[in-house]
Length: 136
Image (cartoon, rainbow, N blue to C red; front, side, top):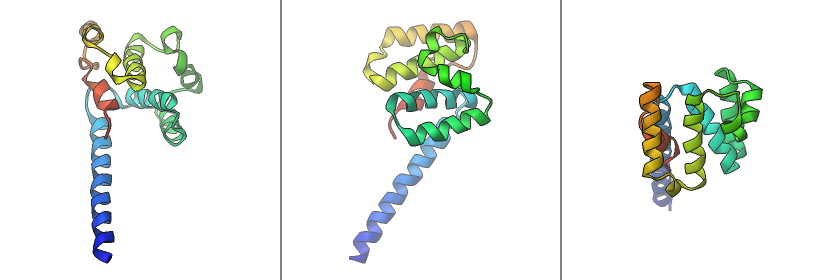
C-alpha cells in the first residue's frame, strides 16, 4: 500500500515540477515584457472566471505598475484609452483564444505579424499568445 501512495506522490510531484517549469518559461520568454504578460494573464483569468488566479495576478499587476483604472478597463480593452495599441494587440488574441482557441485562424495571426512588423520587437508573430494560453 505504501508503494502505491509513494508512486502517486512521485508522479504528482513531477506534474507539479512541470507546471512550475512551464510557468517560469512562459513568464521569462522574451516575447513580451513581464508587465504585459501579467496583464494578459489577468484578462484570461477574468474570462475563465478563476477567482484565485485573478486575485493573485491582479495583485502582481498592481505591483508591476498597472492601475486599478486600467485593470477595471480590461473587459473593454478595444475601446479603452487606457491602453496603447501594443497592449491591445496583446490582449485581443488572448481574449479570442481563451474563449475558443480554434477561432484565432491564420488571417488573424497574419494580422498580428503585420502589427509586429509595424511596431517592432515585442510581439513575436503570435507565438507569445500560444505560450501564454496553451494548456499545461
